[in-house]
Length: 300
Image (tube, rainbow, N blue to C red; front, side):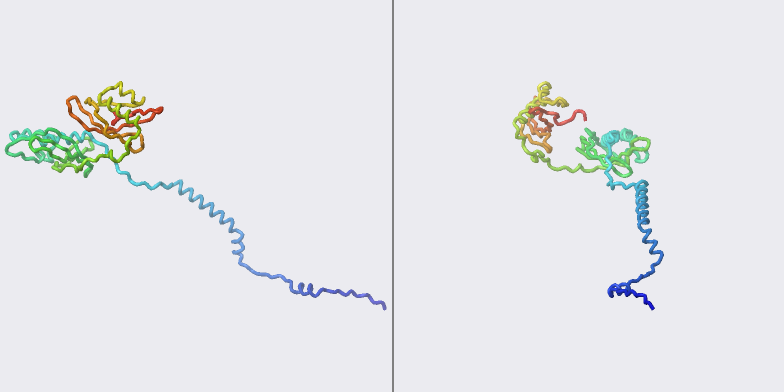
């Protein structure tokens, strides 16, 4: 009997052990976690887009505005109200005890029924007083939109008096007193200050010569001679009182370097002497100093 040869497999023990250890591990996770991990990038992109749209809508509907601080309102002068107050003060302080009815008549257009006859004034038994001049020296805004003026009133009997007068401009535009006046003190003043001491002296001799010559011709009213030291665009209005320049005592630079401050001595034809100050705008044109303005702008 013939035997079939058998095949003997020689399996490496190491490989055999690896095969025995190999296997599949199965773990379970919730379905919502799987979906969340897959969809999270898309949801994040949607959220960013929606946030951008909301921010754009907010800026379109209510854009941010810079924080602004309230600016004090500058009240333009009311020349008519000033004149009204000055006229009242003149009539209020001008009286004659022997003509009481005339005095009441002059105040009647101002006082009306609310302030009574003569705006609350009872004249003495005798005497009189005349106002020589009146000047508005102070203004402030009072209650209910009134303008309160302080007026300096020079009288022949009582001397210099200060009267406070409140004036209202009604909706119709008419002017009216805002109650009775008041006698007050003068605005506070103090000693004069020489501001020239704050600035540096002008050392340029050419500029000193031009300023001195220009002021000499300016004070004397010499138009043609003055024009030689002025710029082409300079506008100068000559003073009405002719003066002879004696000397320039100080000449200093003002802040910025475009203007100088001159202290001068001058005399008029009668022999009166004055110490005066002038501010001049100067510019160097082609190596030569010229004057573009002297003290005032005649157009403002």
